[in-house]
Figure 1 (cartoon, helix red, strand yellow):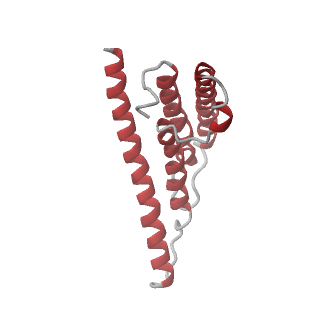
Figure 2: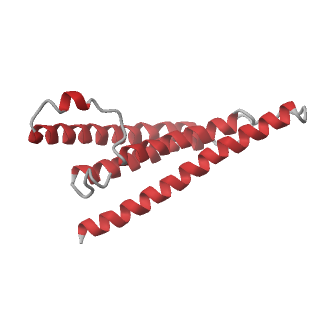
Figure 3: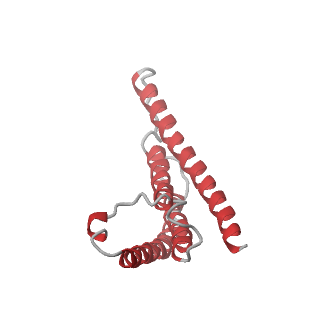
Length: 161
């Protein structure tokens, strides 16, 4: 029952993060395209032509991290690990999962700090709180923690990744 609930949560989580990442990427493409057209065809630059695409690009990047992790697509030195017996390989993989979990906690911890500090400041051209820019860091960290916990607890297998 626990594994079934974990799979449902996993599918919902991946679907939600994929959708948000796709929207962020689409935002970058649309805003940059509009900025180029406005500048070179209409001869009117936009004040937010750099700030908003950067905002969406940061969000896309922070949401892509857990998606890559979920697929086990992160950089790994498999050559070294494969030199060892299967049981030792599993220990290495769990150790890496533990390090990734710790990194997710780090992102949450310091992400919350930087968001709270930067909420008072405003983005220069759009006037949004600067904390919105950095909010992607603890959110991405939270999803990294959830996904790494799934791997650590064996709720999702490497075959499903």
